[in-house]
Image 1 (cartoon, rainbow, N blue to C red):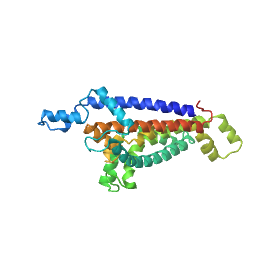
Image 2 (image 1 turned 120 degrees about the vertical axis):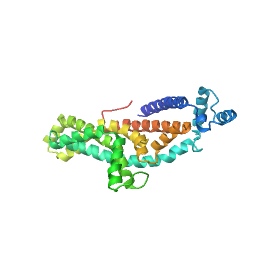
Image 3 (image 1 turned 135 degrees about the vertical axis):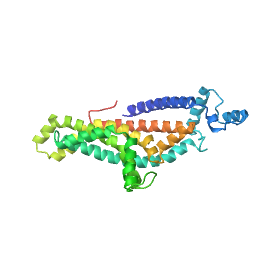
Image 4 (image 1 turned 90 degrees about the horizontal axis):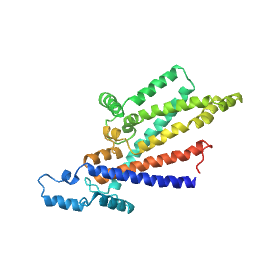
Length: 305
């Protein structure tokens, strides 16, 4: 396991290096940020002075080398827009995204796994058909459209929930539904499919012959062995939720990483865009590493050498 973790750590560093190169290059291709911030009637010397101050007068390869060197020292650059530390801005917004993501993950996991198990043990029934329809709708409806419809019904017309912003549970209900609708449907379908395969296996039939209770068979034996496929998806979606949904946070004006990313792109704030993307990539890599480790716990046949 230690060798595997070291190997994955080296892979992660290479992946983050690749991400940093791509995002660094793309931000420079987006246009001259100095012309974006300075007025059109500014003196040419002002453009030269600002480019020198921001280090944009050097070749792009040199700029990237300086950027990597500064990251190694803990300096992720300063925001052009906020005149603040870029990493500090990302870290400041992360707890707000974590708050919404944690609520969404809890609801998605409970509903996705619960409904998936429920319909799998009632294959061919009206509940199974209803589950298939629900899954189809959940994976077909765009999150931004669902968010706008929820806002229009429950905030504008009924007045039950606030339209946007950060706050208590009421502020999280609509963003969590919009963000988690697709995930509930996907987890439900994966759980149902995996459970149907496991429930038809020989050891489940043997457990029933031995007289084990149906509840113990379903929740202790069947679900544990069927959890590999949902767990794989769960790792991906956890990384996605922890890094913030750009669309959902923008629709509901939730002050997390997703909204910060949109504002940084609009303002051509190089340092913040790079910090957000690298932070998102790190969260994805970490979430998938945790999933790989959990594989060995759920299935003793899986070993990492």
